[in-house]
Length: 83
Figure 1 (cartoon, rainbow, N blue to C red):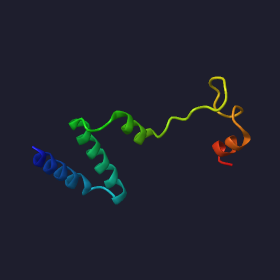
Figure 2: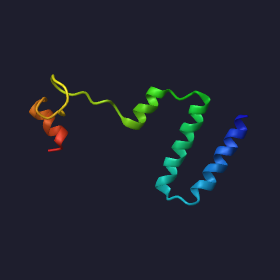
Figure 3: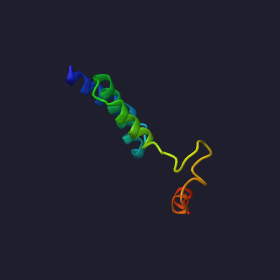
């Protein structure tokens, strides 16, 4: 069965990648790999979400909403704003 999945994945990737730029081939290969791992149950949802979205950003200081500006130190604010 594993050989069948491997062959089907390779054939699908080879067919699809003919019309892609090199930088897009890695994206398609990753999506295909994640689909196979998810189907096998080998993909941990929390790690997959982290891979897609990155770490959750917590606000500095107290209070809710309104973004981090005004709640964080000046050093943190300059880091957030990129300046």
